[in-house]
Length: 209
Image (cartoon, rainbow, N blue to C red; front, side):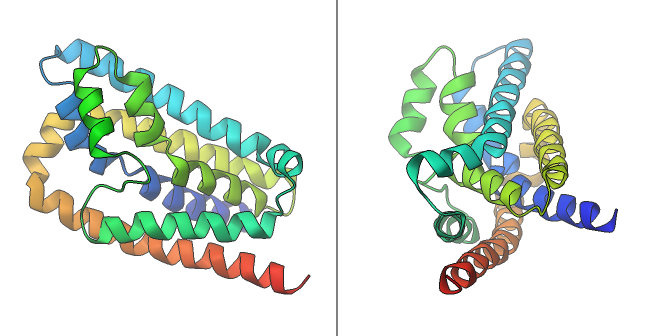
């Protein structure tokens, strides 16, 4: 039972920090500016359901993708770790990561009428880093049952993300820009450590071949 709980805590930390719903709040407010409160809630709900579904899909079927493209798990761990490290470094500098979205994509999102799927669900919430994290975490389990903590972590992350986005005006008021920046840096530091661990595990497996 202890192994499951430990894997759940590691998974929850990795998924929540890379999804980073607090960091998405300013962008969410920008792309939903002028919308009614009810429409903002619906947008947040749809985005979190779609993004959570995407991560669960890649977590469950990641092994099949490895086989189809002939990619070893060790190589994917290293690649996923590098991608997470880039995201973490951007978070440490408190700036939006271009592995998730670019300024031009954000501007396009502002002009769109329905932003729940693109860019909010993908790539802001379920970006490449989040997908890579879900796949690597699922593969770290020694048995199929060890995937359950990962799926639980994904579900919990997007439940929390929905409530954070739903209360985005309050979050922005309470934390202000400086508070969001401090939180981003703390989460970035933890995410960087997780990224290095991913790369170390992958490199060890590659060298053992």
